[in-house]
Image (cartoon, rainbow, N blue to C red; front, top):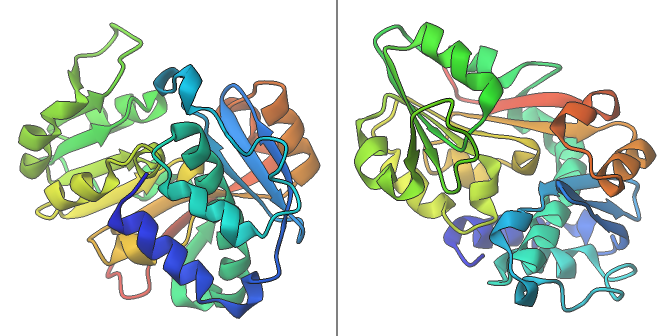
Length: 264
């Protein structure tokens, strides 16, 4: 989706000479996630968001993606067609893994770390959770004064969930804001980060958030939680068979990233 964050991600990747010759080796669009494997062997994934797509929002270049320059396919992240944007973001995530290997010293990176355990939540905090991330809910409730959950298409009646448009009222009041990485795909991330400027802790999380963090840190994000795929073949098989996060455990490592200047 068009947006300044996605634009800056692409500019940053295009400025790296190591990425110019990298090509897309394989693309797998699954029911839950989409995976892109590069000629270097690196993989990036992105939530497919099938429930937000229509038949006219599929991928026009299907059958012609493999063998293309990875930076070209990453550019699909700016498409208004959600299916193309998903492939673009997955490619951004794959390319980002190469950058992390070259510039790991630029960030505070912790592998095998649970994101929610790393988020600083105090007992008097109000937390806004953008996206129904079920494993986080009970943990946040035990640590914070109050929790507001925002979701575009609620699929459960177990919790009080506010529509995503309520972000305009709720997020500016929050001390801690946690945003699903899919906000990068559906074009809402720029506005969500603007609304989060008053928060003490701002996090972006999920396999879709496995990308270079600079544009996010620039806009006040203090912590990002993504993944690093360690078993490419297994990950693509899981995706192709309709798997999701609960199935990813053996194929990847969880990664938490903070800005180098972050003060604990």
